[in-house]
Image (cartoon, rainbow, N blue to C red; front, side, top):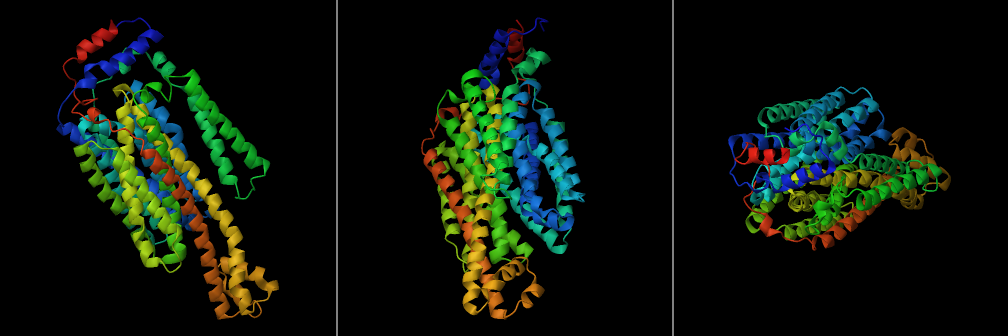
Length: 570
Protein backbone atom coordinates (compact mmCIF):
# COMPACT_ATOMS: atom_id res chain seq x y z
CA UNK A 1 0.00 0.00 0.00
CA UNK A 2 1.20 3.48 -0.75
CA UNK A 3 2.62 5.41 2.20
CA UNK A 4 1.21 8.69 0.86
CA UNK A 5 -1.22 10.29 3.29
CA UNK A 6 -4.76 10.41 1.91
CA UNK A 7 -6.02 13.81 0.86
CA UNK A 8 -9.67 14.85 0.88
CA UNK A 9 -9.74 14.02 -2.84
CA UNK A 10 -8.40 10.52 -2.12
CA UNK A 11 -10.96 10.00 0.63
CA UNK A 12 -13.81 11.11 -1.62
CA UNK A 13 -12.56 8.80 -4.38
CA UNK A 14 -12.49 5.87 -1.95
CA UNK A 15 -16.10 6.47 -0.92
CA UNK A 16 -17.18 6.64 -4.57
CA UNK A 17 -15.17 3.56 -5.49
CA UNK A 18 -16.65 1.63 -2.60
CA UNK A 19 -20.14 2.31 -3.92
CA UNK A 20 -19.17 1.32 -7.47
CA UNK A 21 -16.82 -1.56 -6.72
CA UNK A 22 -17.65 -5.22 -7.24
CA UNK A 23 -18.85 -5.27 -3.62
CA UNK A 24 -21.96 -3.39 -4.69
CA UNK A 25 -22.87 -5.60 -7.63
CA UNK A 26 -22.27 -9.13 -6.36
CA UNK A 27 -24.93 -11.78 -6.55
CA UNK A 28 -24.58 -14.89 -4.38
CA UNK A 29 -26.62 -17.25 -2.27
CA UNK A 30 -26.54 -17.78 1.47
CA UNK A 31 -23.69 -19.76 3.02
CA UNK A 32 -23.27 -21.67 6.27
CA UNK A 33 -21.26 -18.81 7.74
CA UNK A 34 -23.91 -16.37 6.59
CA UNK A 35 -26.59 -18.40 8.35
CA UNK A 36 -24.47 -18.56 11.53
CA UNK A 37 -23.87 -14.81 11.47
CA UNK A 38 -27.55 -14.11 10.94
CA UNK A 39 -28.38 -16.43 13.86
CA UNK A 40 -25.93 -14.54 16.08
CA UNK A 41 -27.45 -11.22 15.02
CA UNK A 42 -30.93 -12.54 15.86
CA UNK A 43 -29.79 -13.77 19.30
CA UNK A 44 -28.16 -10.44 20.17
CA UNK A 45 -31.27 -8.55 19.03
CA UNK A 46 -33.49 -10.93 21.03
CA UNK A 47 -31.52 -10.46 24.24
CA UNK A 48 -31.21 -6.71 23.73
CA UNK A 49 -34.96 -6.33 23.47
CA UNK A 50 -35.39 -8.43 26.61
CA UNK A 51 -33.58 -5.71 28.51
CA UNK A 52 -35.65 -2.92 26.92
CA UNK A 53 -38.93 -4.68 27.74
CA UNK A 54 -37.74 -5.58 31.22
CA UNK A 55 -36.81 -2.00 32.06
CA UNK A 56 -40.33 -0.84 31.23
CA UNK A 57 -42.33 -3.77 32.59
CA UNK A 58 -40.41 -4.59 35.77
CA UNK A 59 -39.19 -1.18 36.89
CA UNK A 60 -41.77 -1.05 39.68
CA UNK A 61 -40.56 -4.41 41.04
CA UNK A 62 -36.99 -3.12 41.10
CA UNK A 63 -38.26 -0.07 43.01
CA UNK A 64 -40.07 -2.31 45.52
CA UNK A 65 -36.82 -4.17 46.20
CA UNK A 66 -34.29 -1.31 46.23
CA UNK A 67 -36.41 1.86 46.59
CA UNK A 68 -36.39 4.95 44.40
CA UNK A 69 -39.78 4.55 42.74
CA UNK A 70 -39.79 8.23 41.69
CA UNK A 71 -36.65 7.57 39.62
CA UNK A 72 -37.75 4.29 38.03
CA UNK A 73 -38.81 5.98 34.77
CA UNK A 74 -35.10 6.52 34.07
CA UNK A 75 -34.62 2.77 33.68
CA UNK A 76 -36.37 3.00 30.31
CA UNK A 77 -35.39 6.54 29.50
CA UNK A 78 -31.62 6.00 29.68
CA UNK A 79 -31.88 3.22 27.09
CA UNK A 80 -33.59 5.50 24.61
CA UNK A 81 -31.15 8.34 25.31
CA UNK A 82 -27.99 6.21 25.04
CA UNK A 83 -29.08 4.58 21.77
CA UNK A 84 -30.01 7.98 20.34
CA UNK A 85 -26.61 9.41 21.26
CA UNK A 86 -24.38 6.48 20.33
CA UNK A 87 -26.25 4.62 17.58
CA UNK A 88 -25.39 6.97 14.69
CA UNK A 89 -21.75 7.64 15.74
CA UNK A 90 -21.05 3.92 16.18
CA UNK A 91 -22.61 3.21 12.80
CA UNK A 92 -20.48 5.87 11.11
CA UNK A 93 -17.28 4.68 12.80
CA UNK A 94 -18.03 1.08 11.81
CA UNK A 95 -17.72 2.05 8.15
CA UNK A 96 -14.04 2.90 8.75
CA UNK A 97 -12.97 0.38 11.41
CA UNK A 98 -15.32 -2.49 10.55
CA UNK A 99 -18.50 -3.74 12.19
CA UNK A 100 -17.22 -6.74 14.11
CA UNK A 101 -15.58 -5.33 17.20
CA UNK A 102 -18.08 -2.53 17.66
CA UNK A 103 -20.80 -5.18 17.91
CA UNK A 104 -18.75 -7.52 20.11
CA UNK A 105 -17.51 -4.87 22.56
CA UNK A 106 -20.84 -3.10 22.97
CA UNK A 107 -22.59 -6.44 23.43
CA UNK A 108 -20.13 -7.42 26.16
CA UNK A 109 -20.86 -4.09 27.87
CA UNK A 110 -24.54 -5.03 27.64
CA UNK A 111 -23.71 -8.32 29.38
CA UNK A 112 -21.95 -6.42 32.18
CA UNK A 113 -24.90 -4.04 32.46
CA UNK A 114 -27.39 -6.88 32.91
CA UNK A 115 -25.22 -8.36 35.66
CA UNK A 116 -25.12 -4.96 37.41
CA UNK A 117 -28.92 -4.62 37.20
CA UNK A 118 -29.43 -8.12 38.56
CA UNK A 119 -27.16 -7.36 41.55
CA UNK A 120 -28.56 -3.88 42.23
CA UNK A 121 -28.95 -2.70 45.81
CA UNK A 122 -30.19 0.81 44.97
CA UNK A 123 -32.07 2.51 42.15
CA UNK A 124 -28.93 4.44 41.24
CA UNK A 125 -27.05 1.16 40.77
CA UNK A 126 -29.91 -0.23 38.65
CA UNK A 127 -29.92 2.87 36.44
CA UNK A 128 -26.13 2.60 36.05
CA UNK A 129 -26.58 -1.01 34.98
CA UNK A 130 -29.19 0.07 32.46
CA UNK A 131 -26.77 2.63 31.02
CA UNK A 132 -24.25 -0.17 30.42
CA UNK A 133 -26.97 -2.47 29.08
CA UNK A 134 -28.07 0.31 26.74
CA UNK A 135 -24.51 0.47 25.40
CA UNK A 136 -25.06 -3.11 24.30
CA UNK A 137 -28.28 -2.13 22.55
CA UNK A 138 -26.54 0.81 20.84
CA UNK A 139 -25.16 -1.56 18.19
CA UNK A 140 -28.72 -2.43 17.10
CA UNK A 141 -28.21 -0.31 13.98
CA UNK A 142 -25.21 -2.40 12.96
CA UNK A 143 -27.21 -5.58 13.49
CA UNK A 144 -29.89 -4.27 11.14
CA UNK A 145 -27.23 -3.27 8.61
CA UNK A 146 -25.47 -6.64 8.76
CA UNK A 147 -28.77 -8.53 8.49
CA UNK A 148 -29.47 -6.68 5.23
CA UNK A 149 -26.06 -6.47 3.60
CA UNK A 150 -25.12 -10.18 3.89
CA UNK A 151 -28.24 -11.31 1.97
CA UNK A 152 -29.46 -10.42 -1.53
CA UNK A 153 -31.37 -7.14 -1.69
CA UNK A 154 -34.36 -9.13 -2.95
CA UNK A 155 -34.55 -10.69 0.51
CA UNK A 156 -34.09 -7.53 2.56
CA UNK A 157 -37.77 -7.24 3.49
CA UNK A 158 -37.58 -10.85 4.70
CA UNK A 159 -34.32 -10.20 6.57
CA UNK A 160 -35.78 -7.19 8.36
CA UNK A 161 -39.06 -9.03 8.85
CA UNK A 162 -37.23 -11.79 10.70
CA UNK A 163 -35.58 -9.13 12.85
CA UNK A 164 -39.07 -7.84 13.71
CA UNK A 165 -40.21 -11.41 14.34
CA UNK A 166 -37.25 -11.79 16.70
CA UNK A 167 -38.30 -8.63 18.50
CA UNK A 168 -41.81 -10.03 18.91
CA UNK A 169 -40.48 -13.32 20.26
CA UNK A 170 -38.10 -11.50 22.60
CA UNK A 171 -40.84 -9.25 23.93
CA UNK A 172 -43.36 -12.08 24.41
CA UNK A 173 -40.78 -14.28 26.12
CA UNK A 174 -39.68 -11.37 28.32
CA UNK A 175 -43.20 -10.70 29.55
CA UNK A 176 -44.26 -14.29 30.16
CA UNK A 177 -40.96 -15.35 31.71
CA UNK A 178 -40.45 -12.11 33.64
CA UNK A 179 -43.93 -11.95 35.14
CA UNK A 180 -43.70 -15.64 36.03
CA UNK A 181 -40.51 -14.83 37.95
CA UNK A 182 -41.92 -11.84 39.84
CA UNK A 183 -45.10 -13.80 40.60
CA UNK A 184 -43.03 -16.39 42.46
CA UNK A 185 -40.87 -13.83 44.27
CA UNK A 186 -40.60 -10.05 44.54
CA UNK A 187 -36.90 -10.56 43.73
CA UNK A 188 -37.68 -12.57 40.59
CA UNK A 189 -36.60 -9.69 38.36
CA UNK A 190 -33.01 -10.53 39.29
CA UNK A 191 -33.37 -13.96 37.68
CA UNK A 192 -34.76 -12.25 34.57
CA UNK A 193 -31.61 -10.15 34.11
CA UNK A 194 -29.33 -13.11 34.91
CA UNK A 195 -30.92 -15.07 32.07
CA UNK A 196 -30.69 -12.07 29.76
CA UNK A 197 -26.99 -11.67 30.51
CA UNK A 198 -26.38 -15.29 29.52
CA UNK A 199 -28.18 -14.87 26.20
CA UNK A 200 -26.28 -11.65 25.43
CA UNK A 201 -22.91 -13.27 26.12
CA UNK A 202 -23.80 -16.30 23.98
CA UNK A 203 -24.72 -14.03 21.07
CA UNK A 204 -21.48 -12.06 21.39
CA UNK A 205 -19.35 -15.23 21.34
CA UNK A 206 -21.20 -16.68 18.35
CA UNK A 207 -20.89 -13.42 16.43
CA UNK A 208 -17.18 -13.00 17.22
CA UNK A 209 -16.45 -16.52 15.99
CA UNK A 210 -18.37 -16.49 12.69
CA UNK A 211 -18.41 -12.87 11.52
CA UNK A 212 -15.12 -12.40 9.69
CA UNK A 213 -15.86 -10.43 6.52
CA UNK A 214 -13.10 -9.19 4.22
CA UNK A 215 -11.92 -5.68 5.12
CA UNK A 216 -13.73 -2.85 3.42
CA UNK A 217 -11.77 -0.52 1.19
CA UNK A 218 -12.12 2.39 3.62
CA UNK A 219 -10.70 0.22 6.42
CA UNK A 220 -7.46 -0.46 4.56
CA UNK A 221 -6.98 2.58 2.37
CA UNK A 222 -7.35 5.25 5.08
CA UNK A 223 -4.97 6.02 7.90
CA UNK A 224 -6.29 6.28 11.44
CA UNK A 225 -5.93 10.05 11.29
CA UNK A 226 -7.92 10.18 8.05
CA UNK A 227 -10.63 7.99 9.56
CA UNK A 228 -10.91 10.25 12.60
CA UNK A 229 -11.24 13.27 10.31
CA UNK A 230 -14.13 11.59 8.52
CA UNK A 231 -16.18 11.31 11.72
CA UNK A 232 -18.68 14.12 12.28
CA UNK A 233 -17.51 15.28 15.72
CA UNK A 234 -19.46 18.54 15.69
CA UNK A 235 -22.69 16.65 15.01
CA UNK A 236 -21.96 14.24 17.87
CA UNK A 237 -21.52 17.13 20.33
CA UNK A 238 -24.61 19.01 19.17
CA UNK A 239 -26.72 15.84 19.19
CA UNK A 240 -25.64 14.83 22.70
CA UNK A 241 -26.14 18.31 24.14
CA UNK A 242 -29.56 18.75 22.56
CA UNK A 243 -30.95 15.32 23.46
CA UNK A 244 -29.79 15.38 27.09
CA UNK A 245 -31.04 18.91 27.80
CA UNK A 246 -34.35 18.34 26.03
CA UNK A 247 -34.99 15.16 28.00
CA UNK A 248 -34.11 16.80 31.30
CA UNK A 249 -36.51 19.67 30.68
CA UNK A 250 -39.37 17.38 29.64
CA UNK A 251 -38.74 15.10 32.62
CA UNK A 252 -38.80 18.04 35.06
CA UNK A 253 -42.04 19.43 33.60
CA UNK A 254 -44.80 18.81 36.17
CA UNK A 255 -42.34 16.59 38.02
CA UNK A 256 -42.24 18.74 40.10
CA UNK A 257 -41.69 22.05 38.28
CA UNK A 258 -44.29 23.96 36.24
CA UNK A 259 -43.54 25.00 32.67
CA UNK A 260 -43.00 28.59 33.82
CA UNK A 261 -40.11 27.52 36.05
CA UNK A 262 -36.78 28.85 34.78
CA UNK A 263 -35.12 25.45 35.18
CA UNK A 264 -37.60 23.81 32.79
CA UNK A 265 -37.95 26.63 30.26
CA UNK A 266 -34.24 27.50 29.97
CA UNK A 267 -33.15 23.86 29.70
CA UNK A 268 -35.76 23.18 27.03
CA UNK A 269 -34.78 26.29 25.06
CA UNK A 270 -31.09 25.41 25.22
CA UNK A 271 -31.71 21.80 24.15
CA UNK A 272 -33.88 22.94 21.25
CA UNK A 273 -31.20 25.45 20.22
CA UNK A 274 -28.57 22.71 20.05
CA UNK A 275 -30.83 20.53 17.88
CA UNK A 276 -31.62 23.46 15.57
CA UNK A 277 -27.88 24.12 15.31
CA UNK A 278 -27.39 20.44 14.43
CA UNK A 279 -29.96 20.74 11.64
CA UNK A 280 -28.26 23.84 10.24
CA UNK A 281 -24.83 22.22 10.47
CA UNK A 282 -25.98 19.12 8.59
CA UNK A 283 -27.93 20.99 5.90
CA UNK A 284 -25.49 23.79 5.09
CA UNK A 285 -22.01 22.97 6.44
CA UNK A 286 -21.43 19.21 6.54
CA UNK A 287 -22.96 17.45 3.56
CA UNK A 288 -21.04 14.20 4.10
CA UNK A 289 -21.57 14.02 7.86
CA UNK A 290 -23.98 12.24 10.14
CA UNK A 291 -26.92 12.99 7.82
CA UNK A 292 -24.97 12.30 4.62
CA UNK A 293 -26.74 14.00 1.71
CA UNK A 294 -26.13 11.00 -0.58
CA UNK A 295 -28.70 9.06 1.45
CA UNK A 296 -31.42 11.51 0.48
CA UNK A 297 -30.53 12.00 -3.21
CA UNK A 298 -32.39 9.11 -4.83
CA UNK A 299 -35.93 9.79 -3.59
CA UNK A 300 -37.95 10.96 -0.59
CA UNK A 301 -38.09 7.54 1.07
CA UNK A 302 -35.25 8.08 3.54
CA UNK A 303 -36.65 11.35 4.90
CA UNK A 304 -40.10 9.78 5.22
CA UNK A 305 -38.60 6.69 6.85
CA UNK A 306 -36.85 8.77 9.51
CA UNK A 307 -40.05 10.62 10.35
CA UNK A 308 -42.14 7.43 10.46
CA UNK A 309 -39.61 5.56 12.60
CA UNK A 310 -39.57 8.53 15.00
CA UNK A 311 -43.32 8.07 15.47
CA UNK A 312 -42.96 4.30 15.79
CA UNK A 313 -40.34 4.76 18.53
CA UNK A 314 -42.56 7.26 20.31
CA UNK A 315 -45.50 4.86 20.10
CA UNK A 316 -43.55 1.75 21.14
CA UNK A 317 -41.99 3.29 24.24
CA UNK A 318 -45.31 4.84 25.31
CA UNK A 319 -47.06 1.48 24.88
CA UNK A 320 -44.31 -0.43 26.68
CA UNK A 321 -44.56 1.85 29.72
CA UNK A 322 -48.21 2.92 29.96
CA UNK A 323 -50.11 -0.18 28.88
CA UNK A 324 -48.91 -2.41 31.76
CA UNK A 325 -49.55 0.39 34.27
CA UNK A 326 -53.10 0.88 33.00
CA UNK A 327 -53.80 -2.84 33.08
CA UNK A 328 -52.43 -3.18 36.63
CA UNK A 329 -54.41 -0.21 37.97
CA UNK A 330 -57.73 -0.70 36.20
CA UNK A 331 -58.19 -4.25 34.95
CA UNK A 332 -55.76 -6.88 36.24
CA UNK A 333 -54.46 -7.88 39.67
CA UNK A 334 -52.30 -10.92 38.91
CA UNK A 335 -48.76 -10.40 37.64
CA UNK A 336 -48.74 -13.34 35.25
CA UNK A 337 -52.11 -12.36 33.76
CA UNK A 338 -50.73 -8.87 33.27
CA UNK A 339 -47.81 -10.36 31.34
CA UNK A 340 -50.24 -12.43 29.28
CA UNK A 341 -52.21 -9.31 28.33
CA UNK A 342 -49.06 -7.58 27.13
CA UNK A 343 -47.71 -10.65 25.34
CA UNK A 344 -50.75 -10.65 23.03
CA UNK A 345 -49.22 -7.55 21.44
CA UNK A 346 -46.03 -9.34 20.56
CA UNK A 347 -47.64 -12.57 19.41
CA UNK A 348 -49.58 -10.40 16.98
CA UNK A 349 -46.30 -8.72 15.99
CA UNK A 350 -44.78 -12.13 15.25
CA UNK A 351 -47.67 -12.94 12.92
CA UNK A 352 -47.51 -9.61 11.08
CA UNK A 353 -43.71 -9.77 10.78
CA UNK A 354 -43.95 -13.15 9.07
CA UNK A 355 -46.77 -11.97 6.83
CA UNK A 356 -45.05 -8.76 5.75
CA UNK A 357 -41.77 -10.61 5.12
CA UNK A 358 -43.49 -12.90 2.65
CA UNK A 359 -45.68 -10.22 1.09
CA UNK A 360 -43.03 -7.51 0.62
CA UNK A 361 -40.35 -9.92 -0.62
CA UNK A 362 -42.78 -11.43 -3.12
CA UNK A 363 -44.50 -8.27 -4.37
CA UNK A 364 -41.67 -5.75 -3.70
CA UNK A 365 -44.34 -3.51 -2.14
CA UNK A 366 -43.16 -1.55 0.90
CA UNK A 367 -45.53 1.42 0.88
CA UNK A 368 -48.94 -0.23 1.38
CA UNK A 369 -47.97 -2.43 4.35
CA UNK A 370 -46.40 0.63 6.01
CA UNK A 371 -49.63 2.60 5.60
CA UNK A 372 -51.53 -0.34 7.08
CA UNK A 373 -49.13 -0.45 10.04
CA UNK A 374 -49.91 3.09 11.14
CA UNK A 375 -53.64 2.70 10.48
CA UNK A 376 -53.55 -0.25 12.89
CA UNK A 377 -51.78 1.89 15.50
CA UNK A 378 -54.47 4.56 15.09
CA UNK A 379 -57.19 1.93 15.55
CA UNK A 380 -55.50 0.69 18.73
CA UNK A 381 -55.25 4.24 20.10
CA UNK A 382 -58.92 4.97 19.39
CA UNK A 383 -60.01 1.74 21.06
CA UNK A 384 -57.92 2.40 24.17
CA UNK A 385 -59.02 6.04 24.37
CA UNK A 386 -62.68 5.00 24.31
CA UNK A 387 -62.31 2.14 26.82
CA UNK A 388 -64.35 2.27 30.03
CA UNK A 389 -63.89 0.71 33.45
CA UNK A 390 -66.11 -2.14 32.26
CA UNK A 391 -64.03 -2.88 29.16
CA UNK A 392 -61.71 -5.44 30.75
CA UNK A 393 -62.51 -8.27 28.31
CA UNK A 394 -62.41 -6.01 25.25
CA UNK A 395 -59.13 -4.43 26.33
CA UNK A 396 -57.66 -7.94 26.40
CA UNK A 397 -57.87 -7.97 22.59
CA UNK A 398 -57.02 -4.35 21.77
CA UNK A 399 -53.21 -4.80 21.98
CA UNK A 400 -53.38 -7.14 18.99
CA UNK A 401 -53.91 -4.09 16.77
CA UNK A 402 -50.80 -2.42 18.20
CA UNK A 403 -48.79 -5.61 17.74
CA UNK A 404 -49.85 -6.06 14.13
CA UNK A 405 -48.81 -2.48 13.36
CA UNK A 406 -45.49 -2.58 15.20
CA UNK A 407 -44.53 -5.89 13.57
CA UNK A 408 -44.93 -4.36 10.11
CA UNK A 409 -43.57 -0.86 10.68
CA UNK A 410 -39.97 -1.41 11.76
CA UNK A 411 -39.16 -4.01 9.10
CA UNK A 412 -40.50 -2.08 6.13
CA UNK A 413 -39.30 1.34 7.25
CA UNK A 414 -35.77 0.05 7.83
CA UNK A 415 -35.81 -1.61 4.41
CA UNK A 416 -37.06 1.57 2.72
CA UNK A 417 -34.30 3.66 4.31
CA UNK A 418 -31.54 1.15 3.54
CA UNK A 419 -32.52 0.93 -0.14
CA UNK A 420 -31.91 4.68 -0.43
CA UNK A 421 -28.30 4.30 0.70
CA UNK A 422 -25.21 3.40 -1.33
CA UNK A 423 -23.53 0.25 0.03
CA UNK A 424 -20.88 2.32 1.81
CA UNK A 425 -23.58 4.23 3.73
CA UNK A 426 -25.90 1.41 4.77
CA UNK A 427 -24.51 1.35 8.33
CA UNK A 428 -24.88 5.08 8.92
CA UNK A 429 -28.39 4.90 7.43
CA UNK A 430 -29.28 2.09 9.83
CA UNK A 431 -27.71 4.14 12.61
CA UNK A 432 -29.93 7.09 11.80
CA UNK A 433 -33.00 4.85 11.76
CA UNK A 434 -32.13 3.37 15.17
CA UNK A 435 -31.13 6.74 16.61
CA UNK A 436 -34.24 8.56 15.42
CA UNK A 437 -36.42 5.71 16.70
CA UNK A 438 -34.82 5.95 20.13
CA UNK A 439 -35.10 9.74 20.01
CA UNK A 440 -38.84 9.31 19.60
CA UNK A 441 -38.84 6.99 22.59
CA UNK A 442 -36.70 9.29 24.70
CA UNK A 443 -39.07 12.23 24.36
CA UNK A 444 -42.22 10.07 24.44
CA UNK A 445 -41.76 9.11 28.08
CA UNK A 446 -41.41 12.62 29.53
CA UNK A 447 -44.10 14.06 27.23
CA UNK A 448 -46.66 11.37 28.00
CA UNK A 449 -45.71 11.33 31.68
CA UNK A 450 -46.45 15.06 31.76
CA UNK A 451 -49.82 14.53 30.05
CA UNK A 452 -50.70 11.71 32.43
CA UNK A 453 -49.52 13.41 35.63
CA UNK A 454 -51.15 16.75 34.86
CA UNK A 455 -54.45 15.01 34.08
CA UNK A 456 -54.66 12.85 37.19
CA UNK A 457 -53.48 15.73 39.40
CA UNK A 458 -56.61 17.62 38.34
CA UNK A 459 -58.99 14.69 38.00
CA UNK A 460 -58.32 12.72 41.19
CA UNK A 461 -59.68 15.39 43.58
CA UNK A 462 -62.57 16.18 41.24
CA UNK A 463 -63.66 12.58 40.62
CA UNK A 464 -63.33 11.47 44.24
CA UNK A 465 -65.22 14.53 45.46
CA UNK A 466 -68.00 13.89 42.96
CA UNK A 467 -68.23 10.29 44.17
CA UNK A 468 -68.18 10.71 47.97
CA UNK A 469 -69.59 14.14 48.83
CA UNK A 470 -73.14 13.17 47.74
CA UNK A 471 -72.88 10.20 50.14
CA UNK A 472 -72.44 12.50 53.14
CA UNK A 473 -68.68 12.95 53.58
CA UNK A 474 -67.87 16.34 55.11
CA UNK A 475 -66.02 18.68 52.71
CA UNK A 476 -63.65 19.44 55.58
CA UNK A 477 -62.55 15.80 55.61
CA UNK A 478 -62.24 15.45 51.83
CA UNK A 479 -58.51 16.22 51.74
CA UNK A 480 -57.71 13.58 54.39
CA UNK A 481 -59.92 11.09 52.57
CA UNK A 482 -58.14 11.63 49.23
CA UNK A 483 -54.67 11.28 50.78
CA UNK A 484 -55.62 8.09 52.62
CA UNK A 485 -57.33 6.62 49.56
CA UNK A 486 -54.51 7.31 47.10
CA UNK A 487 -51.90 5.97 49.53
CA UNK A 488 -54.05 2.86 50.16
CA UNK A 489 -54.03 3.51 53.92
CA UNK A 490 -57.11 1.61 55.07
CA UNK A 491 -56.53 2.43 58.72
CA UNK A 492 -56.42 6.17 58.02
CA UNK A 493 -59.66 5.90 56.04
CA UNK A 494 -61.51 4.18 58.85
CA UNK A 495 -60.74 6.86 61.47
CA UNK A 496 -62.17 9.70 59.36
CA UNK A 497 -65.50 10.71 60.94
CA UNK A 498 -68.56 9.46 59.09
CA UNK A 499 -66.71 7.31 56.55
CA UNK A 500 -68.61 4.19 55.50
CA UNK A 501 -67.78 1.19 53.35
CA UNK A 502 -69.94 2.55 50.54
CA UNK A 503 -67.99 5.83 50.63
CA UNK A 504 -64.69 3.97 50.37
CA UNK A 505 -66.00 1.90 47.45
CA UNK A 506 -67.26 5.05 45.73
CA UNK A 507 -63.91 6.72 46.34
CA UNK A 508 -62.08 3.83 44.69
CA UNK A 509 -64.44 4.11 41.73
CA UNK A 510 -63.73 7.83 41.44
CA UNK A 511 -59.99 7.20 41.67
CA UNK A 512 -60.20 4.60 38.90
CA UNK A 513 -62.17 7.03 36.73
CA UNK A 514 -59.48 9.68 37.21
CA UNK A 515 -56.77 7.23 36.13
CA UNK A 516 -58.86 6.17 33.15
CA UNK A 517 -59.01 9.80 32.00
CA UNK A 518 -55.25 10.16 32.44
CA UNK A 519 -54.56 7.14 30.25
CA UNK A 520 -57.19 8.29 27.74
CA UNK A 521 -55.29 11.48 26.96
CA UNK A 522 -52.05 9.52 26.57
CA UNK A 523 -53.65 7.31 23.91
CA UNK A 524 -55.24 10.30 22.18
CA UNK A 525 -51.81 11.93 21.87
CA UNK A 526 -50.19 8.69 20.65
CA UNK A 527 -52.99 8.19 18.13
CA UNK A 528 -52.54 11.71 16.77
CA UNK A 529 -48.86 11.02 16.06
CA UNK A 530 -49.74 7.68 14.43
CA UNK A 531 -52.33 9.35 12.21
CA UNK A 532 -49.78 11.87 10.91
CA UNK A 533 -47.36 9.00 10.19
CA UNK A 534 -50.11 7.10 8.35
CA UNK A 535 -50.63 10.10 6.08
CA UNK A 536 -46.87 10.46 5.56
CA UNK A 537 -46.57 6.77 4.65
CA UNK A 538 -48.79 7.35 1.63
CA UNK A 539 -45.90 9.20 -0.03
CA UNK A 540 -43.39 6.32 0.05
CA UNK A 541 -42.07 5.26 -3.36
CA UNK A 542 -41.85 1.53 -4.16
CA UNK A 543 -38.32 1.09 -5.58
CA UNK A 544 -38.88 -2.39 -7.00
CA UNK A 545 -35.78 -2.36 -9.22
CA UNK A 546 -33.55 -2.08 -6.14
CA UNK A 547 -34.92 -5.32 -4.70
CA UNK A 548 -32.66 -7.60 -6.77
CA UNK A 549 -30.24 -10.46 -6.09
CA UNK A 550 -27.19 -8.28 -5.39
CA UNK A 551 -25.35 -8.66 -2.07
CA UNK A 552 -23.68 -5.51 -0.81
CA UNK A 553 -21.25 -7.14 1.66
CA UNK A 554 -20.55 -10.86 1.12
CA UNK A 555 -18.83 -12.62 4.01
CA UNK A 556 -16.14 -14.16 1.76
CA UNK A 557 -13.66 -12.31 -0.46
CA UNK A 558 -14.82 -12.38 -4.07
CA UNK A 559 -13.10 -12.10 -7.42
CA UNK A 560 -12.29 -8.49 -8.12
CA UNK A 561 -11.41 -7.43 -4.58
CA UNK A 562 -7.67 -7.41 -5.26
CA UNK A 563 -8.08 -5.39 -8.44
CA UNK A 564 -10.35 -2.92 -6.64
CA UNK A 565 -7.87 -2.41 -3.81
CA UNK A 566 -4.98 -1.97 -6.24
CA UNK A 567 -6.94 0.72 -8.05
CA UNK A 568 -7.56 2.56 -4.80
CA UNK A 569 -3.93 2.29 -3.67
CA UNK A 570 -2.81 3.66 -7.03
